[in-house]
Length: 110
Image (cartoon, rainbow, N blue to C red; front, side, top):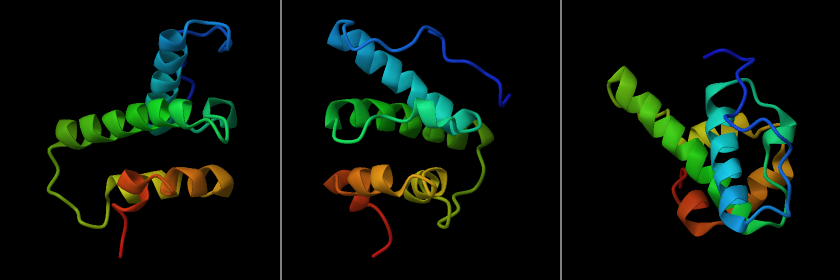
């Protein structure tokens, strides 16, 4: 994917938007985080579970679409968990918050 790709809505995210639009923006920023070079401005804010879940849903959807598109054999070493941890290794506070979500952190290696 092109590292310079922009989200479909290029205006700054405005917290005064209706909640649905803000969550939709964060969903697409999650997609962008998986498909292009990570921009720290495209990461959800710490402490905001709703926006983190929207971002994570976008990231997970893009990861799943990529797996389906390549039709590559399942590689047990490359999971959604490892994709998240690899993408956010430079952002440990956000990674820690996301891994505290039971359905996310509980899916990793035990």
